[in-house]
Length: 262
Length: 321
Image 1 (spheres, rainbow over the protein chains, first blue to last red):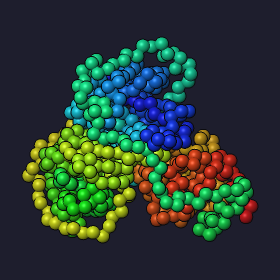
Image 2 (tube, helix red, strand yellow; image 1 turned 135 degrees about the horizontal axis):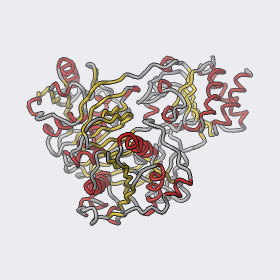
Image 3 (cartoon, rainbow over the protein chains, first blue to last red; image 1 turned 60 degrees about the vertical axis):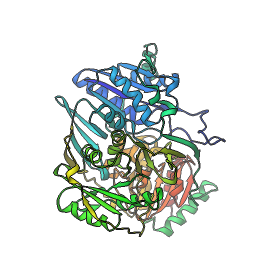
Image 4 (cartoon, chains in turn purple, blue; image 1 turned 30 degrees about the vertical axis):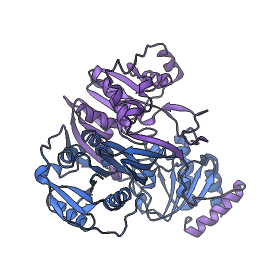
């Protein structure tokens, strides 16, 4: 099975406090720790496991700049066979539909049976996989937490509300967005990354992908972020301060009063 | 202004909470707009929901087809594309269903897609101004959407509170326009969640642990605290993903919905999916070393601390009472 996994380099929200810059037009990006989007790691792991079982290859692709190459190498160190960096100044400012359009260019240059994305990334939109599928006229399933391979089709489980799982049969080629927890992504050590450090990663731009420049980038974006801001959330929590002993004493009083101790 | 439609999610003859929230969101886009509920399904349950929505929405479009008995987003997408006017504004809940349907629907309707909308500021010409959150809720953003050619707008569940306004209208049967509903994805069955050894939905006191616990070996200190308090242990999604605790202990929209009196969120950032699983307005204590964590916006009491240091000290203090 030929599998394409779309990945993204994002600020690691478990490692960073996100602050908004003084102009309010971006977050403070100095000193941010970046990593591959958490969901994407699960997608790559799943792709590798499928190929281990039924044969084929895994290609990882991202839309970004030179710095995004590091996430491709990381996923190749996990076991992805090929990397593709889609990069062009004209991609700048693309909205979700623009990104899906760019990825469609890459899909059409290959011969993939299965395309995977993470269920969502740093902007929380969960949109690119579903858009790409619709553009390709491929069937789509989101929030997939189980994949069983079959002949020309897959059986996939989708995470739905209440811890339940919705089972579907889906024809290939298809697009799946992968939910965390579907597997346990393998650990990648520094040695693994060194091994793929010199592997060439092709870079493709507007012309290579046969894209209409009018359909991508800031000019085509119908969804645009104006600013970042700190919402007025009212009072928020009463922060307990003081020494640890003082904080614990106050907290214990609250717990007693609210029925939090039996 | 294009017509506004809200897709009504329902199961077993009961409308989803989002059914009454989407009309509130729609009226924030255009207070005077006629808002039509679109209800798909089949049989008596479908009629029940249509009649209920006819008391609330300005109009109801009913689409009855056996292929729509289970809400498979791929099938529903085809029906909506066939039935809705091209420049429609379509509202969906941003949940496991809306995420499945919305992005592809926007492509097929050649309209604009905006996901996980938490507030609507209004429309200026063909431009809708909304509020979204990014970076796990740690930053909010104003976003503009060009909706002149139509839009699919996924609305975060729970942020637009259902109100008492009842507009009322007729049920129009659009079943004949649904067209070809064959798809390459077939729904098979729903596999129900397995019950665990503890039913946290019945717990009065929950000590809930998140990513801040850092390592599987540390989970033990959470059980120690829970034992001292007479509480049960719950958790957020990353703990289940890492298989450190069983799925039945996960609080959130994709896990259990709990209604304790007291909820201790230990090292939990507080994604909206997690908060969506906490009902009944409990007293919430949040302990987190990241002051930007959204959990502090909803907690009653907050403590900035590393739970690995704080939990053992709290346990010791409670044991000494």
